Amino acid sequence: MSLGLFRDRFPIKDAGRFEAKYWLPRDGGKVKCILCPQGCEIGEGEAGKCLVRINEGGKLWAASYGKVAAVNIDPIEKKPLFHFYPGHYILSVGGVGCNLSCKFCQNWELVEGLAGVKFLPPQELAELAVKFKSQKNIGVAFTYNEPTIWFEYIVDTARILKEIDLNMKVVMVTNGYISAKPLEELSDYVDAMNIDLKFAKEELYKQISDAYLKPVLSTIKRAWELYKSKGRPFFELTYLIITGVNDTKEEFEKLTDFVAEIDSNIPLHISRFFPHFLMSDRDPTPEKVLFQAYEIAKKKLKFVYIGNIWGNKGEHTYCPSCGEIVISRFGFSTRLIGIKDGMCKKCGEKIFGVFIEENVESNGKILKVIF
Ligand code: SF4
Image (cartoon, rainbow, N blue to C red; front, side):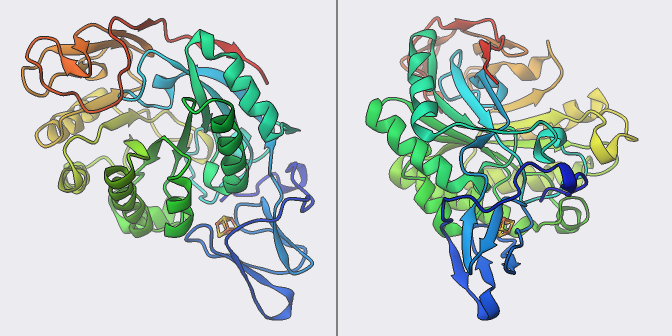
């Protein structure tokens, strides 16, 4: 959840006019939110842990509906998604608040609401995405802060976006802390996700993020079942290695085994930590730790990446059969050099993901900062 360190400056103060989904009435005018596993019991006039779902008049309201804090057109690689329309862009929006309270939050100014918000209705957001389609924009990504707490806004925007153009895509960059039913509902609209798996140990989730590991693992397993049965959501995983916190060989092995048991095709991004927020006293992840984790994961998974070190061998996509580089990268700049019709040009192996063209190139720069 937002830590609420700057509560007096948090821009969401009133309940607004959009009723929330996924809540139950409780005695004495209280409500229980069941959107995420935090399961907050919320008294009259109060907000849940995420600070953006407010009880007013014995009803729960999605108080941050449509209130955006950042809008950019980013390379899809920045989410990170490396196997979903690589070389393309996505209109990326973020709001305020979060249902976790990570002490290393990389977007804490946004999450804590320091940036301020403005109202962007779903129709306008959808139209904005379509406007940039000719510049390789594939849709809308809900990102930067935790999108689960924007549930109603995502569903409404996705409906409108797909009514305007069925080919436009919806993406979420999420911590995976969502209840089973809303996840299932989202799978009708959300085409792809990047899900953060923050720790392999239960106690670290509690100590550092005020959450539990099990619900995140359940989300990943369930998302895979939904993907296999409905073709949505396609997803990739991210594991941020924090110096001295989640950087042991045992944790990498545990994490790799968990992913491999679901499917060895699931791409895993091992990401470098830089000192931030309440963990500013830590050193950046040593490169050798990242490469050690990479080698462990590569033994069991087909697609492993190292993020936040530009120009390393762990940025490219290699064919899992012949080892040829099929997509080369430097930072977010991308070239689809060895892939045709979703297959390795050299040996014909099918590469897991969605690739619509060959010879796509992008320079990896943000196309536009809108807000
Ligand atoms: S979405 Fe917010 S209010 Fe609802 S259970 Fe999660 S943290 Fe609590």
